[in-house]
Image (tube, rainbow, N blue to C red):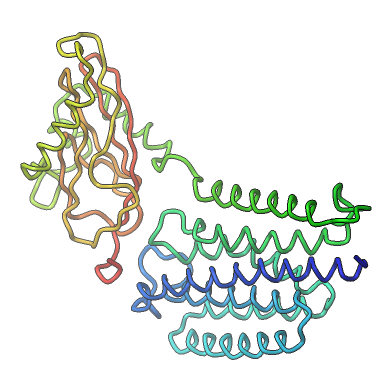
Length: 374
């Protein structure tokens, strides 16, 4: 196979990867925009630079930029012109929309992405490669700033980001790919190409899975320090309230009971955790702290009562202490209810301490948002 045919084949594969990445990005932005559209022009209290609706439009624009790079990588003048015309019209329309709603920071990002495309086209031979690199890396920062409904918004860019970066690497290394073993100097390249294609797909899948599963526990390390201040206090819940400078009232947290069927389910789960012969044993701490409600990565409307419940200790009474990274001390008790949590993401930390002073921690992360979000 001649060298120019090798480069053309690498360009087509890169274009296909970029096409899939662009479609995935547009899908993410469109789905997010369905829920966030009412926020256009009025950023929320925990949005970073612009409203969430503006973030959805920007994700779509970045996906279109990736599609334009795919058209550049594929040797088709008609496809390149069509992608350029469609992208230019959409960019202009979104820029005017942002200007009408005074989303100036989002409008500045539109101009920045257009400038990146213009600068890349000045180096015609490397334009597709440079745009793939920009889209793959910038997308992680953009989705983190745009999708504040999730604690790790950048994870939504895992598929598009990995595919864009794969397209960049393939274009960058294409002059050397066909010197690899099983391909160079071989009469039949199909087995080698198939093998390396499977390896590339495996690396892509592994990279996506790694990004999706990072980072680790939701609770911040600082919560352990703050909780230890309360956990070492041997007083009752009222003493803790006084130490925190809080006054119990109708607007503050108070222990609450779950519905009977929920309590029965929790009790049965605790009984199932016990092994035969465990009942009555001494010196054994309960099998770790566990938060039953709320579930991890849940969004609640502002003002709605949030039920907090922990798994019981099967063999001895334990002390339960709840803490929020945003609101601080929440209260004590196995069951708790709060209806005045602040807007934003809360790292909820539960510390369970037994009668001997041994303790364990559990974490969940929840969001409090405006009612239209939910």
